[in-house]
Image: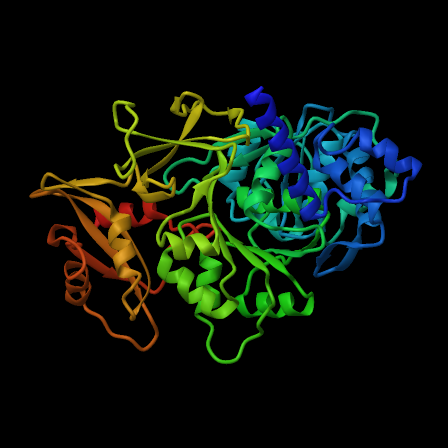
Length: 531
C-alpha cells in the first residue's frame, strides 16, 4: 500500500510539473489531435512526432528563429516529413545518417527526420578534420552525409558514400522539394550517436535511444528547471554536442520557440536575445566568460533562466556572469554517457557555493574508492551515476565503461555532503602524485580563478625526475595586466598548501579549446612534456 501511495503521489507530481510547463493544457478537440495523441512523443518517442504534435496544437506559432527567418510549427513539420521521406530513398530504417551542420533549421530537421524514418542520427563536430570525418564514416557507416557547403574541404575525401550539400548548389532543398509531404510509412525508433569530446583521447560514439523513460527524464528535469512551453529559448551551444542536443530536444517536446545562430559572438548573442525577447537560454561556460568580459554598455536580455553545461563552471566565473545577465544561472553537470546528473540552481549556488547541485528524483550518485567500496559523505572518490537517460554503449570502437549497481563511472572525482550536494574535485585521470602527495589540478585552477589579473588558466601534471610529477600552469593574463611566474606561484601558496603551487608557469595568448569550449589539456600536457 505504501508503494502504491508513493507511485500515485509521483504521478500527481509529474502531472503538476507538465501542467506548469505548459505541455499539458486544455485544447479544442480535433480529429488530427486524437490521432497524434496515439503517436505522441511518449508513445512513439522521437523528435519528429514531437514536431507533428505541436504542428497540430500550435501550427502558426514560431518553432525556430534563425538567420534565415522564422519557421512555424506547421512549416517545420512539413519540412521534417519531406526530409524523412527523402532519407528513405537512400537509406532504410535502422541505418545511420550523419550530418555536419551549423546551428539552424536544417540541423533540427535532421534530428527530427531521422526519428520519423527510424534511422540513427550521427551529428558530426563542425571542427572535424578530414581524418576525423573519415574515422566516423568508417566506424559508424552512415548511408548519407548532409553537410554545410562551408565544410567542403573537410568533407571531400572523407569517404562518405553520398553527400547532400546545404547552401550553394543546395541538393538538400532539392531533395526536400521532390519528396512527398506526408507521414513516412514507418514507425520510427530514434537513436542518436553522439561522439565524446575527445579532450583526453580518440572520440567515441555514444549511442542512446530517445525513449524508454523519456517522459520520466523530462519530468525530473522540469522539476528542477522551470522551462515552459511559452519560453523563447535561445540555444547557443552547437547542436552536435550532448548539451545542445538535450536542450533542443526539451524545447521541441515542450513546444517552445527555439532561437539559433550559426556562430556565437557574445555581444551579438545578447543583442539577438533582446530583439527576439528570449526568456531562456542555454550556453557553455566559455560563452559566459566571453559575456562577462564585455566592456561598455551592452544589451541586457530579460532572461528568466540560463542553463550552463559542457564543462566546469567555476564559482568566480558564475559570479561575474551574473553581474551581466542576472541571478538566473542553472549549472547542469553530467557527461555524454549519462546525460545530466545534477543541477545547481541559483538558490543552490548561494546555499552551497562550489557544488554542482543535487541529483534529480530518478538519478542516483555513488561515490566509491579505488576498490569499489562506497564512501560516506564528505569523503572524495570516483563518481558513478545512474539516470533514466539510457546509454546503450559505444559504437564502432572497443571501449569499456565501469559500472557499479547500474551506475556508470563519469570520469570525475568528488564527494557528496550530508545534504546530498555533489562537489567535483577533479578528473580521475588528472590527479597527480607529487612527492608522495595527491594533487588535483582543478583545485589550483579554482584558486587562480580568483586572481584579478588572470583571464583564464589551466593546470596539468607533467613528469619530473625529482618529484615524479609536478604541476604546470598555463595562464592567460587580462589586457593591460603584467604578471610573473613568481606572482602566480605566490598567489597559490597563499591560498593552498605550498606543495600545490605549480612548479612551472607558461603565459599564453589563449588556451587551446575544442568546439564546445573545453580546454584541450592533452595538447597542453603534450607540449609541456615535450619542452
